[in-house]
Image 1 (cartoon, rainbow, N blue to C red):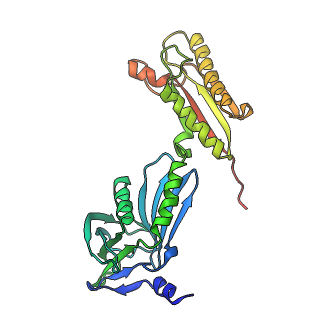
Image 2: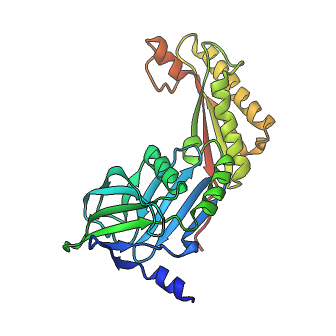
Image 3: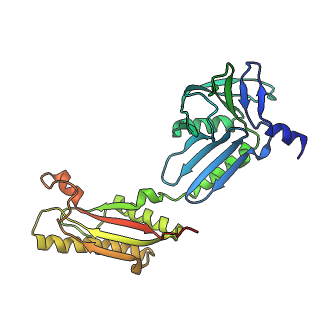
Length: 290
């Protein structure tokens, strides 16, 4: 191990403000990009603390979180700033606000707007620093510093990954409802077809999805016999669409129930619209424990 690496891993140092700083400011390998069609993330290793993680899951906005076995920051509000690295010729600092710290392994979790702002500051060459009193109650505050060393290479891989993400994740598609017009079973609306296309895109990427349960429903308008036929046609139409897109027909179990299982009343137009549906339930193959 080179001397510079030893210094980088030894991350406790005292700044002019007497803060205890956790950082990996010299290690080019501190950033790691993890990529797949299901999720994209960048993990920044902070020795003696844990990880700073930027993540975007398929179908979800980006998010950021600090994660470690023990939160080094006291519960409450932590100041977040973007500042120039110590080696920069011109020093500048931008106050990004106060973020909530919890006394848990995931001490800080931030939404997409904050996440994208932080990524922009890192790309601009500024490191990010969280400052809060030490969790153990010491006099000196603690700081978690996220450095720019090695960031851009990981960020390029992260952006490439975002372009290839699936449109939805399994939690979003495993229970899907496709809605129909009154007395209709054909001419599925584009917004509903997108739901089916999201299912198809996901199952093409995840071979563990092995079973599809398709159930047709109607509102209470008309006779029970007619509604049972209509529910069957709706279920068949959805089944046909999925099979034409490559879903194995033998993996599909199709059923129809007419007006028997409403999810809303049938007194108003809006209530009846919620009942005119086909539900698709996906099941994954259970992998037995080793």
